[in-house]
Picture 1 (cartoon, rainbow, N blue to C red):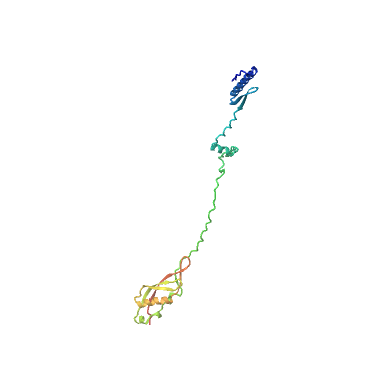
Picture 2: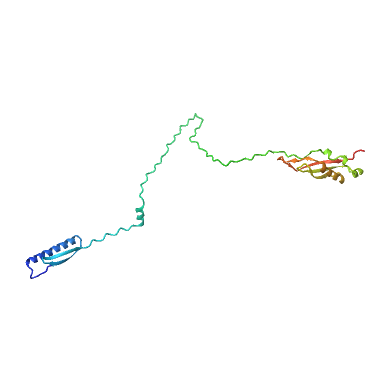
Length: 229
């Protein structure tokens, strides 16, 4: 740029031309360096003066965006690598050669039987066994009924006969019941047979296979015979 002034001296013109050339040189250097330079050119008493104001510095670039997975990886603690695990193999066992002349067999590492204690079993104590015993007369059948037990009516009518009976003996040895199993032929003789046996007969009670007294039975017969006069 040049400003013509007829009143300006040649020396001032020379200064103005030199200022213009200097301005163009500075602008060209700014373009080459990639800088945007702004300025104002003014005229002073001594000639043209250029004032340059560089643009403010560019703002810093934004921080890079962090993906959540990368953030977790970045925050994960750093652990030292684990050394490889070495497995120790036992040395092979070499069996001795078999000698055909030896009859004994040697077993290497025989299997062990694991014994687990179980609950203690208490075996019941067997109770002593007894042989069952039937009721037996204590005071003897011969004295239970005699000829003196004849009723007068039976003597007058000459009633005779044999009556068979079956007695039920209680655990106390007494007769609990009497049954005529074979009649004498006369009801009066049969009734007197049971009546006298229930009153007079005594027994050792029967016992079961545990030795305990129990109810038993007894069978017999009575012969009614009128004595000779």
